[in-house]
Length: 294
Ligand SMILES: NC(=O)c1ccc[n+]([C@@H]2O[C@H](COP(=O)([O-])OP(=O)(O)OC[C@H]3O[C@@H](n4cnc5c(N)ncnc54)[C@H](OP(=O)(O)O)[C@@H]3O)[C@@H](O)[C@H]2O)c1
Image 1 (cartoon, rainbow, N blue to C red):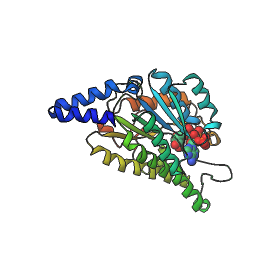
Image 2: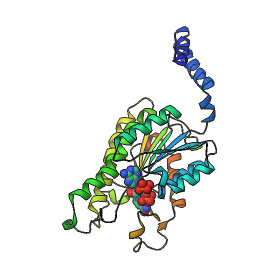
Image 3: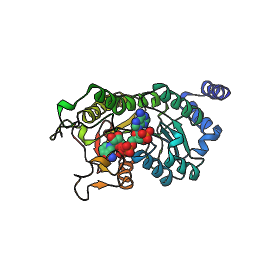
Image 4: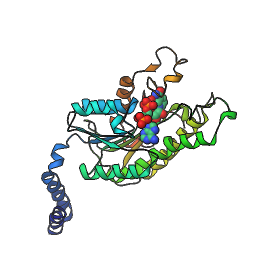
């Protein structure tokens, strides 16, 4: 409150433009945490394993000043994240977030507000394709179940959108991963099979349609973001077919050389994220930077 009053006094005592500069100077010179946060703050949601965990690793390794908040359903069981925490004790925070429980999304936003006050980059890296005895990618309409459609939709489309909603007030321009990026970025992991225009094979009704829903929700959010004074760029990313738990049961038919490592895919995706421009807002990119049709 005292800080606000000091800024407010500066504002009323000086002409508007100079006052704004003074407020900015006052804020950045008096905030101890801003000195420690030169490298920005990134949030990776769905960070326990797979592509999300690799994003956390590369964000920490490539930007030696950047802070990363990693969220997952069960922090105590997230061994990969806990290992990273021993190496990057100060720069990595781990928070509990389950996409199906909105209060955990709100609680994470509150923790980030209290600890950092802002975010420069939000990556939604979670997703489900199959869960043994619960969800199997459908090969025919006769195998489509209401419960599978609803579950895929809840985790792949609804959850990431609620994360964007609750983190939105925190999103601020800045170098979230050690780059010259001067805009805040939201990147959600989609999948090429979510493209309606590209659907030639059929099948995987739940997964495909949930990713198509994620694409439409994200595109809709991007239009609203684009209208704001300090726009946030919102993109969708297809990581390629990547060697993770998600793709493992389906890797048999992947052509030689087309199964990527997590390291390779995330390197490519970070390259896209770090180079996005305002005109990229609302686009759906593959790992190689090519746009994917809706
Ligand atoms: N791998 C590929 O070939 C491929 C291809 C195209 C698109 N993608 C997309 O890329 C993203 C990452 O996939 P991946 O290969 O890294 O998958 P993965 O290794 O199976 O990891 C999935 C992540 O999602 C999390 N998750 C699942 N349900 C959740 C929930 N209710 N709340 C919060 N987190 C939840 C998991 O957490 P738990 O550990 O708690 O389960 C895990 O961290 C997904 O959106 C996927 O659709 C992947």
